[in-house]
Image (cartoon, rainbow, N blue to C red; front, side, top):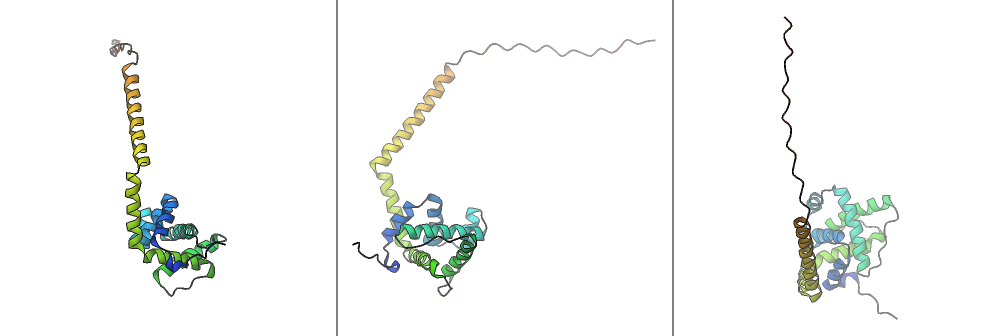
Length: 186
């Protein structure tokens, strides 16, 4: 028997760091910008070049994915109409604590609120994880392999350029013919 999951209000920041790293880059960046950094909906919409309504739908999708990654029982909206309604309700719930939220959306809202509550620790955890990744031997080996590949491509390009056959000499262009005026009939 598995131990019961901790309530959402007790999820540690490390769970959010791990969940955000497991998400696709764009949803993770959106959640980071909106909930960890604390940018407004308007700022995020202008940053991503979308309308506020479109951003709220993207935020809902990202939040549902985050809730799932944290082990919270969250479900996807059942259709586009429910998705649009939930997106509006999520935005309202993030702005006001007393906003009405349907039962299916409650776990997602709680995960978002918890992420916002521990945002400083999550930001520090993400920075530490990034530094750790950059210092890892696997990452350093990948960087060297990329550099080696670029050097090989440059060497191959130089070899092909220098070993190309000589171009034939260009033929001189014939001088343009001068138009002669017709003889005077006079």
